[in-house]
Image (cartoon, rainbow, N blue to C red; front, side, top):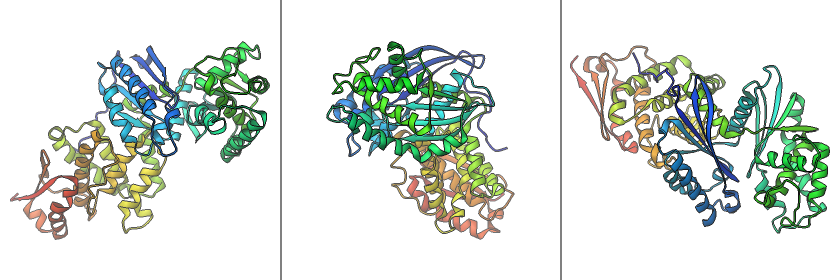
Length: 510
């Protein structure tokens, strides 16, 4: 019976979970206890780091912004020091996505936090934002909802039904980036505002028609920007908390009475938010204009809550990644029968070496998904199909997967045949390289054993791992009737060098 990841939830009643949201403006951390399948918040931490302020055009962080981020993560790390690694998930968003070499930041950041940090794409960020908002304010199952989140570096737009995001977009226009882009010298004017509004509205038009055609029954704004604008609307006695088109217009006129960012004087506006409020109001006005909005309510939830509920889903049998893999398999016309054979064999090998190689259930899931998708590139061309498949997996928006998870998946598919470049794994965080190479070795063997699309496995199939050495034992009589496989296995002795693994095939008399 092949190995399969445990079906029982890894998150139990009474367990403490933590979600860390490494945003472009603020870093957030939320801790919640799982009780009878529900989450109850026990602590929240928030710090204004304004990391996007330190991002330059070359994709590097200033020393000050880098240090602010590390210092904040050190404080967060102290709070979650005693929480198991499997119960913490830390996600980085727009600013870290835009770094030229993310690992230069991630290595010290992970040390400071004491946990791994994943980068999410804009669309995956959007999915998690919607998940958090939907759980905080449960929707009617039949109604469509629009959720907008204006962050420091980007703005996410989502239309969803129930707890499922149907449309997801992420645009490089946030409160910090837009303030820097249009008001870099700190000066404000109606002419500048009009030009900036036209430019951002044009960017939103790329998807606005699709959204308006789909429609929605309720609009919600998530993030600190919406909360700040809502608070100003209350202080100006324009609304009771929601943001309307009329209130936003009056707020903007009041804002532009100031001639500079420093002299903005809006009731209810904090000193912390003042330097970036212009960009936030600008983006929201452009969203109102492009989508024809009249009113948007303010939600207190955001991506951090979505991370927690996603962790529960991964643990409780509703992992969105499973649905994404199934969808890709169908979309690319993969031979499901062959994929299932390879997956079953790969997991059978995995079970035998997992203790020696310190591989866990998460590794098993990733290996299984890679086996299901290893022939994805065949729809493009047979020649170099492993390269084509890896490219698709690395560069697609795959719901539920972080950027690093997609990189691991792509590396496994790229490495499942032919020579393996030692440079293939350089983009991965150091903590994932060894386990990914070991999973790649198991996938290579499983693919070879089923190259002829045989249903039956060799009798007494055994594999043994010891450090960087991997030994495969096969029946001599069975192997003698398969000269192609025998030749392939001999070739693997050299081919696995790229994985840093010394492979040895052995034949026994049975």
